[in-house]
Length: 80
Image: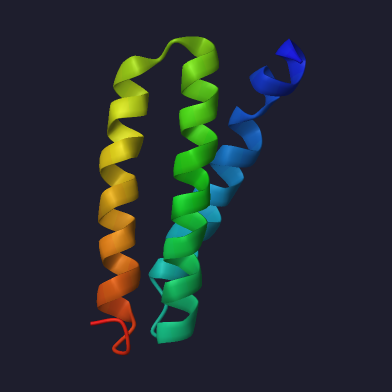
């Protein structure tokens, strides 16, 4: 289990980079997917941070999670 949690940082990094690519898109649909990818990466980083006792990283991810939820809402006119 320890190896699995140690390796979690790599998928978290890949999801974060994918999210950044998508959020920079001109397509509203791709941006929405990007924000959801960011939310997934926030969760992955929080899990990894708990395992590694990286409390500043956890705090950052909680804040970014809230901002990404805001991004989802602002990007979708039906949710506003």
